[in-house]
Length: 436
Image (cartoon, rainbow, N blue to C red; front, side, top):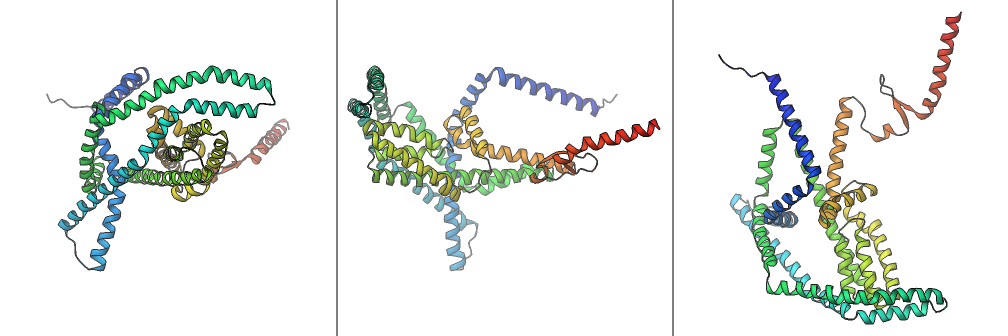
């Protein structure tokens, strides 16, 4: 006797299996979150060379594309040469080599110019901390000389906590800096692992940049093979939107932060702020983090300047406030435009959510990730509205009480207030007719 599958029971069984598996997975994620994140961290450490290579390739692909367009324009349009596949491959590897050399020279130049000054500034701050405490003491004495009660309270706190801060800087921070410098120069295991990941990542990035069209083509083929044409088109469109959102945001933020760092160095040099290079690097680097970045960079920088000269700290805070207003209202919109499409509230939610889950990297990439997620929700919402023959424009749903389920017309709030009166009058007329 031939056994026949009943498709209905098979469907029920697969549905039950999927629901049970999803429930178990949800339970595991909620009550075994530490195990999940430890496994995710282990997987990330294993794939770190691939992650490094993907990041390097993603950042350098615009440079490679720019060089290729220039070379193709010179050879094909100006010199009227026909480039075959072999010549294009040679040009591709040449552009990749030039992009890697350019990136290496930029990183080396920045490290050679900035790192020695930054480390010297940090060590100087720690070594001169007793003198900075005395500067703050003299400034407070001159400020509170007409208020002896406040002066006594402030100096009690200062005498109580300044030795602890000085001891913490000398016993904890300074040895850690020296240990970091020693680990970088002697080559400890962590440094070797980092170098190994970086070198393998560079090799992987070369393969990714050389075959980027092939990887994209193969990915599209898999999508169209698995899903129907309409869903596959939506998935390809979603990935294209994700790439555009991440590319515009990250590249724009890097350019914006470099400009802000340079402007900060120029402004602090004019003001005469101490440790201007260190402060400018901190402000420029933290500016990559949206919304909270300027404040994260300005607070420690202001504290460093306060220990040297309190008046310079006041000038610095005023300058940073003006600089961030310029960045938020003029420079940032010019460079970034509306790359994410998120409101300020959604930006804060994204930074808090992904910053809590992933730390500093989450605060940087959280905004474009959240923008992609919200765009997906918006597409799903519009799709469901279209299925119900309802409009997708937001203006249609403004200032309405409800939608008539029969005509699908919006009912404004004013008509809703008058609606009960009309219904009451209709019921009253019906009641009079029944009495008659």
